[in-house]
Image 1 (cartoon, rainbow, N blue to C red):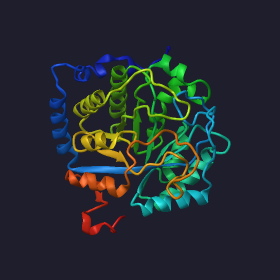
Image 2 (cartoon, rainbow, N blue to C red):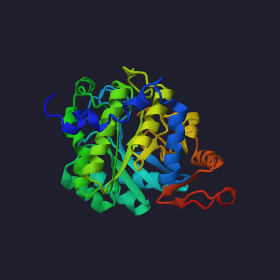
Image 3 (cartoon, rainbow, N blue to C red):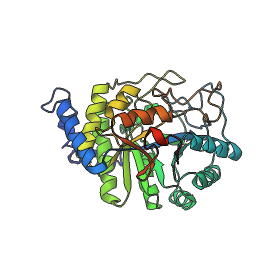
Image 4 (cartoon, rainbow, N blue to C red):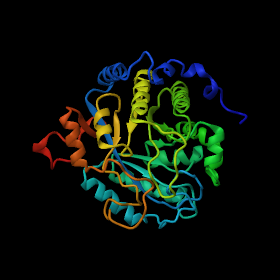
Length: 355
């Protein structure tokens, strides 16, 4: 594909971590873990930032081969009305959640910008921190979301391999590789304060994905140095449609990749979601990861009425409650927080004091 930005193709932008990603290299996993832990403790302390996703809609116009919400999947389609949005947010607050990520599929007639902006309005009136993972928008649209109280945008490139990207995105607006690559910069230009990026691991060669992802976050950090940046490490999970990833990403490689990012980007927030197992998430807490999702539902809504016949976008692996997960963190002497350095749980004696 012509027109790729220089930062994506310039290997010097990631050559320092390349040796860390090779299994059997002179950098054993235990060494990387120790280095990552020391950096994390020094930069972030013994804290874990927590959030939960709220799926507003599973209506989608695109044909992403790997997604349980692709428009050719046989599943019940719906989107929350504004009363339901308020009810779901109230249910999340009752669980102790005060940091929410609002999610949609690609833009449709039912779930368009005006709908999303109203949902951000509602969420910002109820939650201290609101971010969005949705369809691509213009600079003006991102600016309008910022004015409504949206502080962050999460947008995954999915894969940084242009040819694989073309194959996997069978139809819809999401087919445009370069347009998607530009979304983080549009949001930052509009005044969005934090940007989260990532690659969906398993779609392409994981080593190449890691190197290009690092180049991307370094480019954003250099160009928009005031922005808050985070990197997620999602792996393909079972989903409606039965897509099988082309590459198997082991726990060992995932850990090596996360440690390499912490060493290479000491100040960037690293995120691990409920796609991963409880054992892996507990093991990574305190080593390099500084932000995790909690008590996640991948169906539309799902916090007030979790039992329904609707298929989720993917299967959640870590399905522990907020209380269970926070207890696991506290057992490791890690303080769970839902917003800037404000504790959610301060110990067993304050279990009802949830903000």
